[in-house]
Amino acid sequence: MRKALEHPSFPQPPSDSVSLWRYMDIDKLEWMLENGRLFIPNADRLGDLWEGRTPQGYIDWWKREIEKATTDELKATLAYNRDFVFRFSQAFRSRYFVTCWHMNEHENYAMWKCYTNSIEAVAIKTTYKQLVDVLPYYTYTGIVRYIDYSTEKLPFGNLFEYIMHKDKVFSYEQEVRGVVSPTPEAPKDKAAAEDFKHFIQHHFELTSNPGFYAFAPPIDCALLINAIVLHPDCNDVFQERINELCSKHSLPNPERSHRSKPNAL
Image 1 (tube, helix red, strand yellow):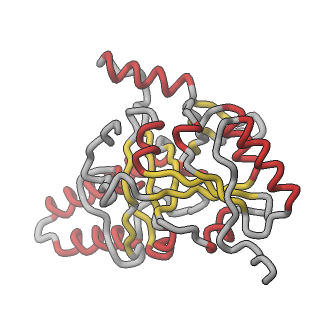
Image 2: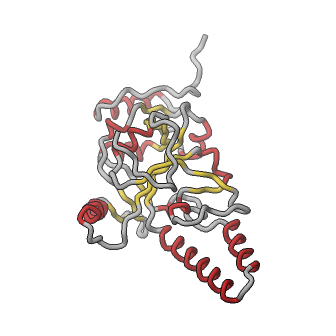
């Protein structure tokens, strides 16, 4: 396994063999397999308005610290630091590109409801090791931590904490993330410049949705995908369609969902 980049904002799972799932409609699977790429959207397109933003609990914490300051100079310093952090966190939100996966050893029926729009859908199953191995080596990967956004603050000291924390209302997601955060311009360091060049080559704006930016690095889908599980309510025609798709791309035959209609006794 290629070792995941180490960073305190990206806690690692207990084992690199933990199972990860990605629930998706058929058009997304077809796009992935036909293009040999993983679609990684910008953080501001993930659907949560609080994604990458400052929790209310953190805003309130800064307010209390400023109110407790014993001198005008200290108040001004704290206010400056608060504004500096808030400005940077807002600016960085558009520079995070995030791939999201559900960590679970078993299929989760609720995920079908949350992340698919029809019965023509599948779940990709892989492992943490396999995900790390196929992603570009400048991708940070780790487990999302959940806090009460109304009362708690983020760990201080790194802007990655903004993208690696979510509100507790999303704790059912048990999320693992891969995060790419490119520099705003080509760095002078040779290795970093190569990373930047690779990112730019595979970064694009959707022609069908101006303002929607994504990163879509080439991946080996056969190395990523252990299994494709069919939506529990799909029909035989859809199953045959996925059979053909798997055969075409040298993938294992699709598996029935554990929630599929039971066979007659």
